[in-house]
Length: 381
Image 1 (tube, rainbow, N blue to C red):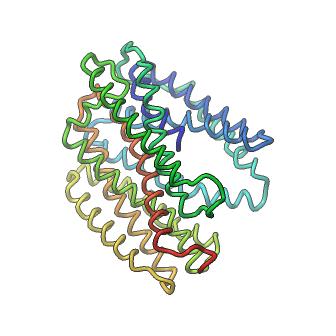
Image 2: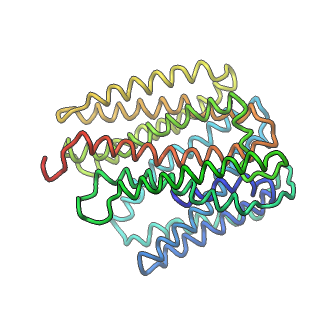
Image 3: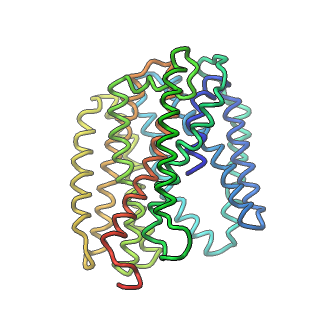
């Protein structure tokens, strides 16, 4: 998450400066190299390095995906294609833990990386052979000061939120106080982001910004990003808290807690293309409003959960949250990006990816902090 938060803001400049094919090959080469290094890692520190290299490749691919869609797909089909993209985004995180759990039950953890290597290598080869360049490139210079400000800015924000989320699950005296370190990191992040934003506003006058903030001048984009941020915080918070609640309060096994998350994510993936096609026909309003209502009602119902809540009801509630986000994500993202002029799409894609990482960290931190505040420590239960 830290690597994604630091690298994704730079991808707006990368997408303007380099060809799509070169970026894809670079990104998949990084991811494949990180995967290979993880498969061979004999100690933990090298495993962390491997994960950072993997995340560097992922950070390039994610914004490039949306930029490519808006460069190639006609407006009347964008909702359907973004819906298909959303399927992958929704289903992969749900299948990942389940598949990983199965692999770990029969093999060593190195096989988490070994089984991925053929897939990443195949994607790299196919992309190198068949990938075509899209969009227009321009030779803008890289503003080093912007990069130096973005690292503590976005990195400090995500790290600080993550530390605050860990605060409620850390034994007193077990090490440095995560609340203190989290608040310090947040402070550094906020100051650095303020300086970063001021720098971008100055550079965008000559079209040299690392992350062009003129995207937020478009009301539809700003509104869409705002709603997506709040909804993503709720979703990721629920994804973290529900398994903890099911295991520590209802006494279910880790396997059961993982399976409870799976149906909602699978339904989200199956419905995303359908919702995308409907967006292409009728627009966002008839999807977004029901999505907000459903998500709010489901979260309110989850607030009523107790020690005797049936597990099936928890699964149904998670499905409601996932379905609500599905009704929001595809139409809002498509509508927001479509409102921008093409020159701003690379920056907008980078902003979407960055916001998702920050929202994920904020949702997890907020949910864990609230859960720790209102619940007694496990030893006192």
